[in-house]
Image (cartoon, rainbow, N blue to C red):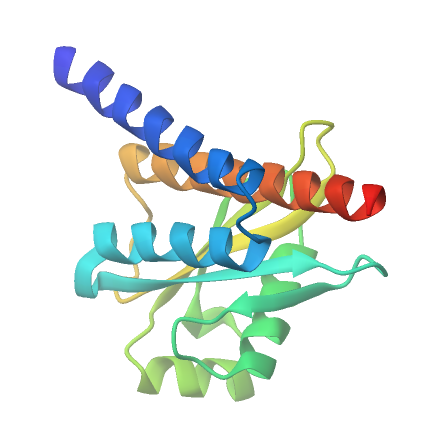
Length: 168
C-alpha cells in the first residue's frame, strides 16, 4: 500500500509540473511532447504514445504520432475515439481495424490501440491519448490509472491553452 501511495504522489507531482509549465509560458505542443515522452519512457519498447487535439471545428487532429504517418494517425484517432462511448478508455485490437489502416500498424508491430479521452474539467472531450501497443492484451489497472491521469493532463492543458488564447 505504501508503494502505491508513493507512486500516486509522484504522478501528481509530475502532473503539477507539466501543467505548471503552461503557466510559465510553455506552449501546448511542448506539453503534449513532454507527456508523450513520459509515456514512451514508461512503456519502453512496448508501444508509442499518440496525442490528438480537437480543433475549432471539434475535429480530432493528430499532434504527436510516435513516428507513424500523421494523416494515418489522425484517421485512427477519429475512428477509435468516434465509435462507442468516448467517455471511457478502450482497447481496440488492430486485427479489428479496416484492412488499409491495420496493415501498416501490423507491419510496425502494433497489435492494439489503448485509447483514452482527454477531457477538460467540464467533461468535454478536448483530445485523445492513444497508445499504439506491441501486445494484443489489455492495459493493467496500474497502466489505466497512469494513462487516464496523463489524458486528464492533456485535457486540462488544452483547456488552459484555449482560455489563454481567448485572452490574447
